[in-house]
Image (cartoon, rainbow, N blue to C red; front, side):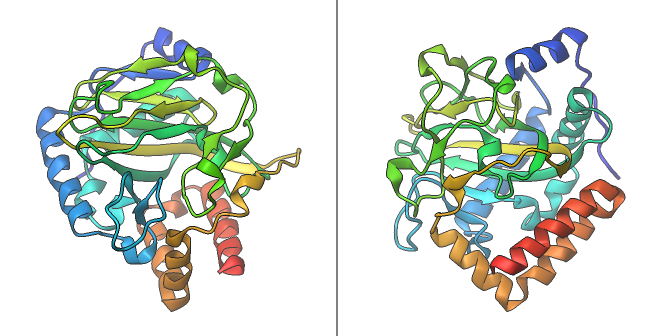
Amino acid sequence: MEAASNVTLTPEQIASFHEQGFLVLPAVTSQEEVADLRQVFDRLFASKAGRKEGAQFDMVGHDDDDAAPALPQIINPVNYAPELRDTHYRANALAIARQLLGPEVTPAFEHAILKPAERGAATPWHQDEAFRVDPDFEYQQLSIWMPLQEATLENGCMEYIPGTNKGEVLPHRSPGSDTKVHALECAEGFDPAKAVPCPLPAGGATIHSGRTLHHAGPNLTNMPRRAYVLGFEIPPKPSAQARDFYWNRDKQTANRERKRAWRRRGGVLVEVGRKLRGGVWRSPGRLLFEVRRALRALKGS
């Protein structure tokens, strides 16, 4: 049975999100569920779930097999832990997304992020939309970021630059101009001195749009910092204006190579099955976008 939502935003919160580009909520699920999610995440990271598919990797390193990752991430952890499909967090996140973007909203992606104790690296300043590999679409997206323990300045809470959601996607680059690194960093056009830190209790959340500039500092504490991110969007439609996200073209990351190899071994069929189980067929707009994206992936594999 699907979990029910119990989060209703006020008109003031909705207006603030669209004005500032982010929103802070003190709670989006129970402490009991947070404790359960911590156990799931610790198991997934310890077992390197998804690594052979290119889904688990180090965001800020070369992702060598024998190197300790500084900022490990798992794309779509629900693929490796089906119990994540039926949580109060997911139900509340979808309800929040629909209140902020409208009833056409569908789930788009999710990821698990770990900043290891005492060595978890900073997440560079970036806009989420800059990661889109196909810039010829119009994206209306948001991310809901929930820490699985208290998030502080010392362990890497989220920080935002208000109002950047209203601008365009700024130029990005690979950190240190190293195309073997998965992460992106914003290259120009913003003032980090205007950042607003957003510390949170475990089970609270920040919500930000796809163009809101954000980052998170390093983890300097003796405890790991885990975060669970759910992304939602209105099904993308072709854009009337051509754009060039040139910073994505030259990426040569190890996780991309693992993903290409896995797809050639039949992983594409696994991906299709996962999309169907996730209910992509319920939204015609979402289905059309996913088909086009899958064809692009096949062409590049």
